Image 1 (cartoon, rainbow, N blue to C red):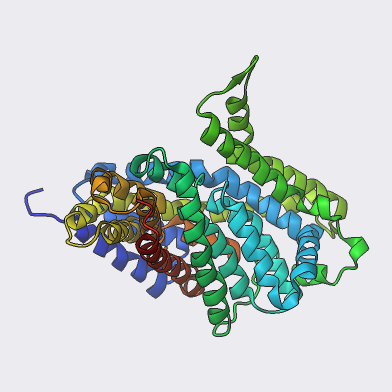
Image 2 (cartoon, rainbow, N blue to C red):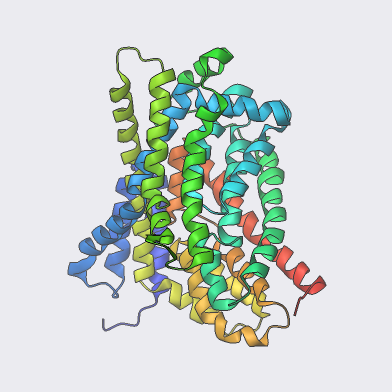
Length: 461
């Protein structure tokens, strides 16, 4: 390439492309994202012209490999839990404890707890049917329910090990301090999730009304019919909750084993970590949960002209559409990353004359906005600031939190999580921006504020 080139060009072209294709021309999300990815590849010399389509296909395939089976199984779980009445049974139990007016507290607390050992996307798969069923039972507040579910899951995703992102950052920035990182992570996560979930959730809920649309092959009429069922027409509490419990226990078993036992732990002839690695892989865990949900659906569902198998097949079709859009969003972010925008921003900000906590947050935030992945933003930033940890006057666990806060900011079109929330929640693009994108930004800013205050009051150095 003979002329000077900045990765910033690819970033700006990418923004222009998605706005033109998805907002102005209103193309289907999958098609628009694929075209935008090709356009970004075309303007970056980091990817050879002849290799752009292959790079797109590779990134799409890598994303699909990670989320394909879990999303398809999540579609079965969502369809089965909603149509069998399992989600309604759980919602009735929750509202009996918190009361109708505080139903959001049950969803917020559940998602926050579940996301500690489980990836954000898996938590959202499991909690979205409950949010939809809660909306049908209460009659409104869908924006609130989606925000509290997203807040709980997204906050622990970046702040609290053994969630993989903060766990990896802690290993590089604060080695040997995992216990302190977990303690400070919880201290930062709780107020961040409160402000983003309950405060912002209730605020935005008073200003926008999001209807129940068809999502995961379940319509509003289907859900509202189920809310009117008598108690004896619904599964029992254990059977209703089994898919969620099964998925969380299986995934958590592997998280706990690898965190505390290492890569291998042989007990007699049995390698416990190998077993939990199999059982706790999301591909298996979500499959087991889907099987449990499908059996409950077979027992409690009502089938008209189409049978149980046909209903599950329709759910899988819906899940395939969601998986394709989510993987395309990840491919768009991957092409921006291939253009070098992450390293460009990180290097440009590395020597900014700010305190290390603020600088780390700013680097992670800019990388996140530029290329989409919170985990990549966190790991990129950790590699840059790790050599500077010795200059900190506070415990390095605070630096882990600042990086996590920055990496969570402003999830938008180049983040696969944005499309996951939109499609599974049954939202428009604008509704997703108003709820999910703003939510992640509030978590980021609140998290930084809490870190700065705590590090000043309790430096722990």
